[in-house]
Length: 359
Image 1 (cartoon, helix red, strand yellow):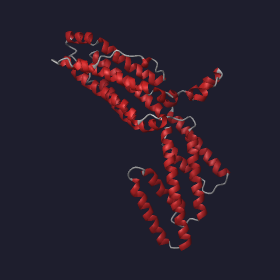
Image 2 (image 1 turned 180 degrees about the vertical axis):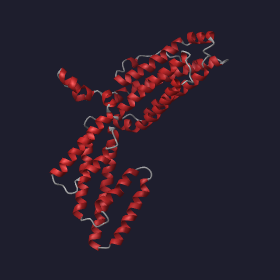
Image 3 (image 1 turned 90 degrees about the vertical axis):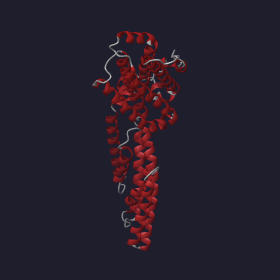
Image 4 (image 1 turned 90 degrees about the horizontal axis):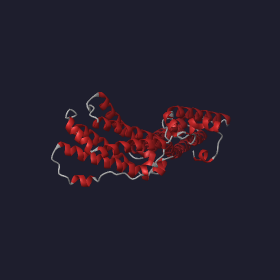
């Protein structure tokens, strides 16, 4: 992307490349791009192994599907490729040793026993951290050695084919990479827009128990789960620490929780006088919260963070806590001030990390 931004391209070329270079379009058509990329990668694998007439070349294609087939995000592909490489090397080494001892000793029962013990050892470590590497090591033992009766040359060729598949998977993961940070940005932007929609419903007196309101809340809860699953890949791709990502996630979670409480503690919409007084007293906070929620969503989607860098005039929640609470309306006012401070805190975190996630 940086290459294309620094090279001055003709207008018609830019128009042709825009669907491929625009992050939001790539995010929207991620599944299509992923399927085309895997298809081209498999075609390259088949042509390469058959063109070079490599024995057992199908294992290169199998390996490529294992590494890249179910992973569309660039960060995950790199991690799985490394784990697959370690598992392949460990499993291939063990498999070749088993084939060598079978050829030297000629004791099938001993080979079966050793294979069972080795795979039991890998299965022990397959549960827990590094489990994927351990599982692939056990699988590769059988790919290379069979039941111990495979020729040594076949085992070596299968090892080579697997490493070719890993290399091709990594190469094609760099072709129009589908970064996890794109999904994280746009899902977070959508969640912030939903927060703004819920807040508008609350302060305008709309029902907080109808299907439309509950649908928004359910969508926000689903977004929270999805954003959490993306965080490890985002951290690897753009070098944002998990601590910072978790802080942003925590602010979003607090925002959603506060909105749920506000919906249940707001003045009765039928009490027009109380509602009008609260609207006047919290006019600045209402505007600030909505402006910042929509502003953060637009910045995440477009990458333009200039507006987010402006200082806000959010009241200090600690000062609001010093005021005695005498009624439910006072509690509602305090929650609104805390929500405004929480939204502003999220804005600050996004601004500080914008150089990393704005790719």
